[in-house]
Length: 427
Image (cartoon, rainbow, N blue to C red; front, side):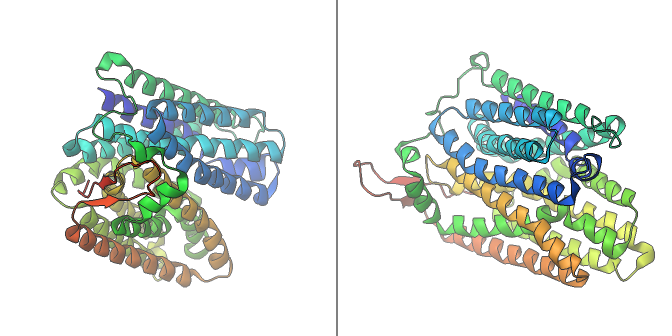
């Protein structure tokens, strides 16, 4: 029951975020008349807030109840969303988006830790898959519903979206409180097995980073995280739509259709893919993700050669990307957690979330420079190369895992603590 409530909480939160995401740029730039610079800065500050919050949320999840960390982050996100209603100047809008980013991302590693604590190893991929499906569904429903209530011709036209986002995150936090209640059985203290926070969890941030980066498999996982983020997620909101409009010259509605197809494919295929890949190692599946995303970029490159098919190929590309996402989402977090030093699971997940967020924030800048200079083919070629690098990194990760034996992450002996075992099984 706890896992179901956690999945529902994730879906409700993303429903609120989905009401804001598709419209906040146009609202800031055009409706409020603040210009494209402020609108772009709002997106960037959102990412900066997310980048700062992810390691903090992960670190706190190792040192205190991840339920309280996640709920606190949801309250911060709700406050950030609500503040946008009263944001009457560019500065207040930018601050609100920054706080919004802080809250949304700080909750992510804490929720991942809760899945790892509440769900047995054999079911973790399935629960992560359902969580991702719920988030995709919530995002799609939120964006679709907001289309009927948002009015970008009035300064108050986004208030229903901001209110829905705030309410969604508060409801999500309430669901997590219910899931963490004692009525469901064993409470969730910081010492709960099997992912107990031990004395390493109390290490300094520098010692924790040294312990994490001492593991070769985690270094390869970090490269995979960065390349797969750059290979798709960094361009989902800006680069790909910009390419469609400036190079392919498709209609704006095609972009919305492509995003909808992406969500539908994830919802339809997610659990089927989990069943079909249940016996495959995480590194092998990530190799598949990189290969699928390479294919996606190649299909997109064909769209510029066939203008009459450009819209159809653009939509198809988003569908192919979604197939890779159905393997990426259930695998990456459990795999990362399984390689993390004991007691530093939340810290490791927070660090890797920050890597993904930070490099995703670079995507719009890269797209703006390359596409602004008229180098559409360079844009495609760059992302093909990045996706192939992800395949290589996943191949090296698979080799590193196959060679590894249980190892010990050693911290400076300041308190006589024994070195802690590194879990080396694949999630």
